[in-house]
Length: 188
Image (cartoon, rainbow, N blue to C red; front, side, top):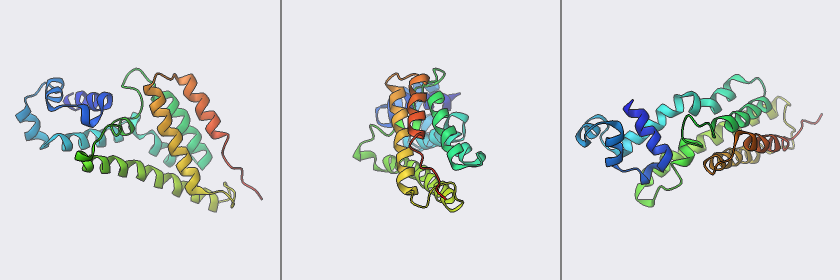
């Protein structure tokens, strides 16, 4: 329950804008208890992000990459799930790892690097998945897996921000379908 309260605060306000006072009030604990349990705000934040990444809301990208038999199917599922998950009113809009990064300052370079590494790991997973698809003939030999991975990552990150700006599932689904229309067809 306390970790869920911290998650909501970090998701709504970002890492930098969330204070220890706000965290302890929302979590129903004293500052000493927070420090005893987590060491510091940074460690609490990392725990929040790791827990989020294992939740259905935070794990849908990895799940789609693992479960879908084709790369195109995986990216279709990722984009459509992002369109449904990001504006869902049961939690703050968008993606925690994208939203929390928008206001990290240079004083928190470790947190910025942590979030960047997570996003880059997704990008690398996208590229690996697309290279495999290319080797299996699902993607044209002329396609650029690195550029396509970066494109889909940018679309997903943009969808997160659009959800925070009030975009609906319908609007984000339109974006997802348009992005999917850029999929390069395999050529014999």
